[in-house]
Every structure is written in C-alpha cells, then in structure tokens.
Picture 1 (cartoon, helix red, strand yellow):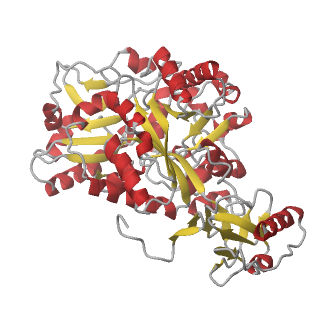
Picture 2: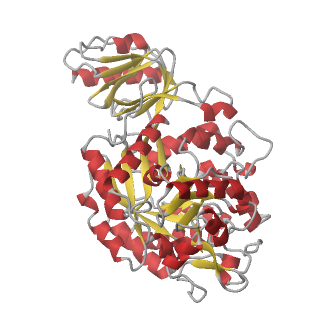
Length: 579
C-alpha cells in the first residue's frame, strides 16, 4: 500500500504542478527508473518515471523519482532525451517482410532494365529449375507493360514469379505458367484475372490471389527454421523503430497459416517475441483451411499473442490492375480488357455472405479486419458491420475497415454510430510510383480525396494507422507520422498527394498510440504514459512535437522498453536470427 500511495502522490503532483514529496520505498523499490528526461504525459511532461513489475508506479521530477531507487534498481540517466509511449502498427506483415529480405528483391520504383538485371542475377545463383521469387515492381516505374517474355530472357532456366508493390498482382514467366497449366484456354478464376494479349495468350500478369495462387501454390514452402529466422529479423527491426505492439494483418500470407501460427507460438515461448501481437487469421468463403485455423486459434495463444482477429479481403487495389471495387467507373483503361472488372473493380465476397460471416465472428468475440481499398468495398464492409450490430447489439469489438484509399463522404459519417474503425495507410501518402498508378486509374476529381483521413477525424470516427509493410519499403513509423501531416516526401517536397486531407502532428501521434491501443483492445494497459499503465515506452533522440515537421521522419529510437524490459538499445549490437 505504501508504494501505491507514493505512485498516486507523484501522479497527482504532475497533473497539479505541485512539487512531488515522497520518501524511498525499501519494501517496494522500482525495478527501473528513467531520470533527467522529457517524459510525455497525457497532459504535459515529467522529467522521470519509475517502473515496478512491468507497470509504471510513479511519474514526477527527477529528485522525487531518484529517491525511490533501491539497491537492485536499474538506473537510466536520459540526459535530456524524450520518452514517449510505444508505437503501434495495426496492419503489418512482418513474416512477409523478413521473407522478402531473403528473396529476389528489387528496390521499389525500379525501371525494367534494373528489375530484369536483378532477376538475371538471382537466376544465375539459383540451381536449374529452382524458383526465383520476390519483387516488388511498379507498372509505371517499369516503363513498359510487363510480359512473360521479358522474364524468359532474364531467367531461361527457372520458373519466376514476382509480386508487385501492392501484392495484388504478380508477374510470371512462361515456365511458371506452364507448370501451373495456364494456357490460352484457361478461364479466369472467380475473383481473379489472367491478363491476355491481343491473341488471347497469357501475358504473364496475374491479378489477385485467385489467379496468383494457381502459380504460387507450386512454390516450395519455406522450412520452419527459415520462417523463424525471417520473423526474428522483422521483430528486431520493428523494435528498433519503437513499435511495441502490432497487428499481423493476414496470417498465412507468407508461408501458410499453420506454420506461421506455430512460429509465433514458438518465438513467444522462447522469449524472442517481445511485442504485444494481435493475429488476424485470413478467411474466405468456403475455405476449410481458414475455418480449421480459426477453430484452433487458442492453441497458439500466449500472453503476448492474441489470435483474436479475422481478415477478410473485399477487393483488390485501385492501380493499373483496376481490382479495387469502386462506386464510380475507373477513368483509366486496362490494355486488352473490356470486362466489367476493368470498369468497376472486383468485389470478392457477396454481401449476404459477408453479413453472415461478420455477424458470426462478432458473436465469437473476434474482431474483423477488412481489406477494402475502393469506396464500394468500404461500403460493403460498413454494411456488414451494421448487420452485425443489428443482430448482436454492440459487442465492444471495433471492426476495422482497412486501407480506405477511397471512401464516400456518405460512408465516412456512418462509422462512428456503428462502432467501426477506419484503418489508413500513411506510409503510402507521399508521392510514389504506386500513387502515380492510382492517379492514372481513377483520375480527377476522385484522386483529390485520396485517403480522406482529415474528414474521418472531423466526423468523429476512430482512425488507426497500418504500414502494410512489406508492401511499403520500410516499417519506419516516423515516416508515416510525418507524411500524415505533410502529405509530401519525407523531408518535404514540392509535390504532394492528397494534401487537403492532411492532419496535425498531435492527431498523427494519437493514431499511433491511444487510437491504436484502443483498436487492439489494450487501451487500459498501453497507449499513454501514466501511473498504472504498462511500461511500454521508447526513448528517442528528438522530441517530434518540438522539431520542424519535415524532420520527424528522421527521429531515431535509442531504447525500447516493453513491460519495463529493455528490448532494444541502439548502442548494443543486434542479436542473431532466432536469439
């Protein structure tokens, strides 16, 4: 009780401005104290904090907090550095990110010459008939429409499959198509498109999973050791940027659902997984595998692993593929296609089926995350959430419409009354090749309201950020925070993307902290620094609230703490894979 009384007194002193008065607590000394810093609180700053048992027991001035120090207390002199709540990424693919580092990777925005040179180099290192996989290519950056013949010349002895930046299109060579049995006579699968030339022959471009998986399913699965090493690398990378919690947006995306779940559980059991993680299990109508992994989800649950989310893909992307479901027709054209999908995109789940699924998952206590890039897909997701609310009442689950590249003004105001969350992708808001592709596809005036986050916030909707890494080149959240405010390239630029939808820096920081914690059902524990909250905090080299906004992207994390444990220190060498 004595320690609790001290914590309450110190917390009150910060809020009232009164000097903190306390005496050492030998019967309950903190495990960790951070002093001589700038500790960001919900209202103002303190200079120090103390942690016991992973919980913030006190905040206040350096003298008062130092007096709590015991013989075993870890003592950190911040030397003026800033302490912030840990950051959250509610849409990320870390296993995919780690696997991409081991694949045939080309820098995003590379032209066809650079891309094909890299493919040739990868093929030269591979055994004959070994698959060459990787990416990420962008149609506008290539400078020409990708064809299988281009890859045939670069890798004549190997099957090749390369993902584009969005992950919703893949580029295959003739050997890969032949192995999959894809010919002129192969029909488009439901929910997917096999692009064809003027003679009807496959060009090598495959749109959406239904088509891509015809080839991808032939690629040998990685070993458990490879999966573990890939995820371990990504976990360390995210800690180095101050990401203390995240949502794996689509379990199974990189290596299959069961191996990925098994790896998460194994790394948690081994103490390698430090972050607090929500796992979204991919679901599609009629998938027995998806239903089986959802049924088995709690076998993989751990203290910091919550497999309590379901991912549903409602459409594709509004790029050159025209697969995002739109309310108005695309203005751009797709060469060789005059189908309805080229005009309006693809809505992948029928509304009645979607309504029933979301209602069922809501009853099960599972949050639903939708992939919904086009405004028609966003509307379908909101309709399904509304149906679940009508059937079940408000469950407390914040079902999450993800990406939201385009949202009708009429739908933005629907989110708050039905308890829906808009998840946006701030790392994509700066000018980039993929955004050039989106602009060409939808044209004016639609592009003026791209990622309408300002309108969402003004409507009182809950808004959270998701990087979608490794669709984007970096998982660095500081890039996303800056570009939320500037809608320009990091560091500032003359060009911008959706400038009218820019928000303020405090709003951007809230997205990554308190808003995201609420989405992850953890706002009672993390998301802000206060007495009684878990000590998930980061130490940074500059205060993002006090530097020019065009310098925010250059914020460096010095230390990351989760539950009071120091899990990253920029002064220490990185650990090896799996350690």
